[in-house]
Amino acid sequence: MRTLLRAALVATAAIVTLVLELSVAPRLHLPYAVPDLVVLAVFAFAAQWGAAAGASAGFAIGLVQDLAPPGLGALGRNALVLTVVGALAGRVGREVHRSALRTSALAGSLAALAMVLDLLIGLALGGGVGLSPAGVPRALGACALYTAVATPLIVPGLAALARRTDGPGARLLAPPGSAFGVPVPTRSGPAEPAPGESASAESASAQSAPAGSESERV
Image 1 (spheres, helix red, strand yellow):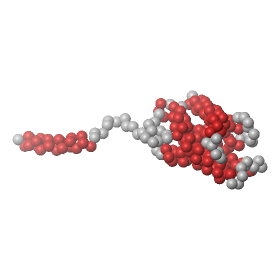
Image 2 (cartoon, helix red, strand yellow):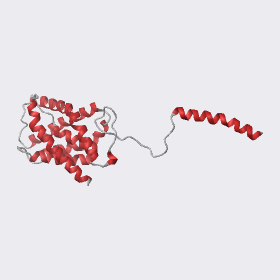
Image 3 (tube, helix red, strand yellow):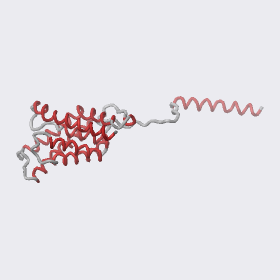
Image 4 (cartoon, helix red, strand yellow):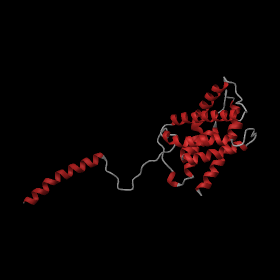
């Protein structure tokens, strides 16, 4: 059941992010590039589910991107890129759970990495990069920046949905300013007394001890 829920969530996120990236983001008329919302979806799932499941989600989302129109690139190109991104995001994603700023920075770095991998695959296949030598660093920087800015709008919601697919036990509390939920330790045993209560209890026992010894002497 959990696998089916994850598959449905990944498929829905792939379609929604692709529609937003191909139809809505170009209307913003941002210079040099657009935010890589597909990478944000892979990042959210990988950070919540781990490297193996993140790589699987990246492969599935990349395959949907390859099959989506216009689909002019080689089949499997985006799937390969996003598989690598998902595996890396799953390894380092849990390290930034308590910092929204580092989460955005990591998302921007993964978006730049995805663009670099895509350009390298294009060169290996002989298709070129489609950018001038001066335009490559501008496109990389712009994509990383726009993706980092869009991270708080995409990642927390998808991460929350990803937690829900794992059942009630995965619903974790998030500290202030966190982009993800992190485990909060709970104890099933009796609660420990507060520092003030323990000090008063020790003083009361210390005062009652001499009285008890005097009664024994009598």
